[in-house]
Length: 446
Image 1 (cartoon, rainbow, N blue to C red):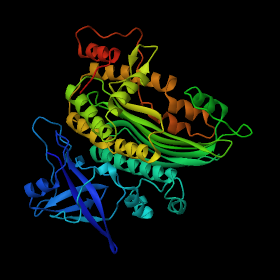
Image 2 (cartoon, helix red, strand yellow):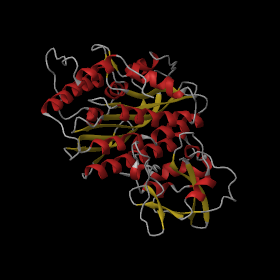
Image 3 (cartoon, rainbow, N blue to C red):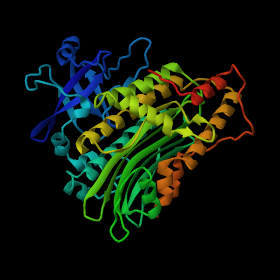
Image 4 (cartoon, helix red, strand yellow):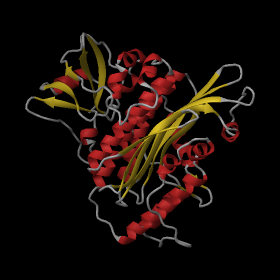
């Protein structure tokens, strides 16, 4: 069933309407009236500590539903990026004040800007890289809005992982003398995750010739002044390496770039994506992961998912091995149309999938048993992960080519352990051979 509930939040003397996505229908419809009729006892929508929304009945603490045979999102079924800290809302039974309910990812720019930036920052893993006063002064600028989004994404994902693992992230703030800095959140040797990293970086300065050359190779026409190209780049990136070989590795990255040319005009674009690297194939997991991403893409353009899924398969291809890194997801870069606002909304939709597309899979396999042989296969596949990241990954290349970059944060994506066996080839008919066949011949999952 799909329903979209309107939560009315009273903040000081004013109320702002927020959309809380409760669940999604197979038909993609949103009927508020039927939701209220079906759940007539539902009255309160509360924001709980840790950046999660929960719908509460009288005498009931938390409500979560799962259809038989489907992966349950549990307490992550309702996901809003952390940031509206210390607010509560009352779910109204009537909708007379609202004639139409837009999708959750279509929150208007005006509503977003009305929120108190300082309050939103309280839910982050650390204070933002940019001074809060500067963010407040420049709240209309895309760079400020994107920094808030990546900080919210980092906090929401870290808290979800901490809840599953029981451990906590080490939070390191770092600065770059050339301009900007970042916040690295890393958890090592946890109960569930061998290494989990979620990084935010906000850097600016002048592009090096090597970095400019990489961009020009992708068709960018960059005209600097006196050989200089001022830039601003920011993003959130994460790689999660679980201990259990039946829990997949996941990676996501969402970023924004601005470059000022000689005449003062600015080029801007967004990039990013989310992809899954399982050690063993699970068809249900693959379908859930890709379906979640497709739903986010379809809200903005029907061609986004098929195009960006294909781009992902092509991008995460280890050419010297003749195989992909994993089973893909979505990937896009240099996205600058139809307009800045629409692309930003699309990126926001994608960023909000990182918890619901991955955490249900983790919970499903949390207690799966595994053999030493399965652990060895995981180590071999991690070796392939390392090869891709060090040889092909654009983010790693850009970071290593940018003066003042924090190497520990760039190489955070590498696993604690990996294995390279000479002339390794799995035995035909095994689960390992099945996995390798998929990596050599990417397929459609939904």
